[in-house]
Image 1: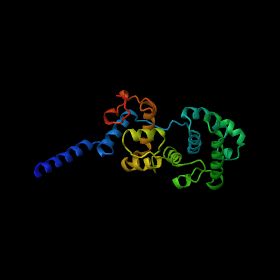
Image 2: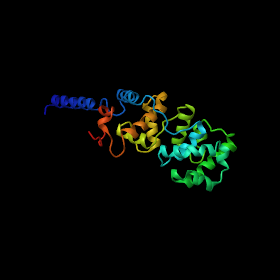
Image 3: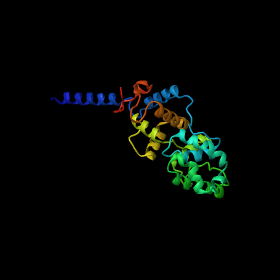
Image 4: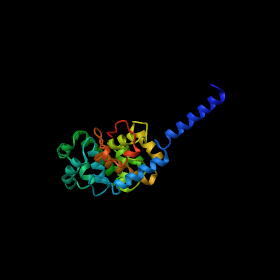
Amino acid sequence: MPRTAQKASSTSSRKIQRTSTKGRGTDPARVNAILKKLDEAYPKATCALKHSNAFQLLIATILSAQCTDERVNLVTATLFPKYPNPKAFAYADPRELEQDIRPTGFFRNKTKSIISATKKIVEEFHGEVPKTMEELLTLPGVARKTANVVLGTGFGIAVGVVVDTHVQRLSERLDLTKNTDPKKIEQDLMKIIPQDRWIHFAHQLIWHGRRICQARKPRCIECNLEPLCYSKDKTV
């Protein structure tokens, strides 16, 4: 092939490659389109865990590990009146608390986390849930996801993005991340989602994951994000 023809062919290939990748992955226009579609579908998305304050939200979030929010809400409906403040949890009878939260699963480990975390809140934070990521992470049983839930929903402070199983699955399906580790996924999302959207965005993905983009059989035919999605496990 003549050199000029080879050059033309190479240039054409690069143009085709650029055209095929435009509007995919984390392209800003695509991310904005996803955010717009989420706003259309879930304008009032919020945390499903019932709570009256940040402390109750902390307890409910610890209980929600490997458990549905619906079941947690059933348990906390009687749990919170029985243990109305951090001190009540901190000095509770462990065996009694285990039975109170037993329906949420992993009740022994959760009891240890709740009692240890609330004792620290009472003894080191004057009975108040701390309002910084660094301080929250010192509480037993609290990792970044729980801390982000408490900061975002409990205090309206956006320092990160909640990455639960739904956010992880949808972020991967929507090609917003190439990572599978929640901490790395969070960092990826923080780079492409405006900070003033971090809290609401997570709620929206969680709602969408529960209602439409389910793990085993995503209901793609009902999904308003379908035109923007090219996941390999799409059902349409």
